[in-house]
Image 1 (cartoon, rainbow, N blue to C red):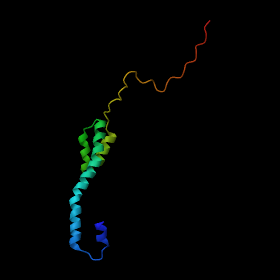
Image 2 (image 1 turned 90 degrees about the vertical axis):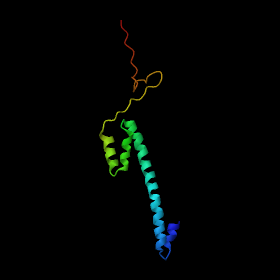
Image 3 (image 1 turned 180 degrees about the vertical axis):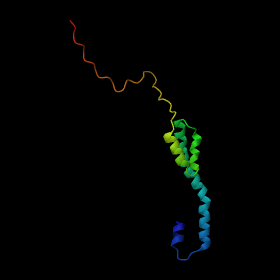
Image 4 (image 1 turned 45 degrees about the vertical axis):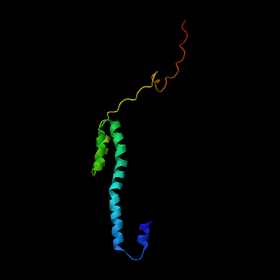
Length: 107
């Protein structure tokens, strides 16, 4: 709100402008850290589930590292674990077999 009032005022105060810029520059590392966390955490889980080292997700902090990581994930073979079977009976075959007609009588 103060920024809008500052922009709309008629007289330009250079000291106030310098003060506002310094305040925004002080908050810039916080904004960058939050943005990196929003990107790195999902890639951490994706790399872990794909069988890669989760530390590869830190490539997002490097310029163009996100592009490299996407290519690695897209074209490398994933070491995915098989889906565990439910406790007890295994799954029925999918799709179920059609019913068999009765055999003709012999005789």
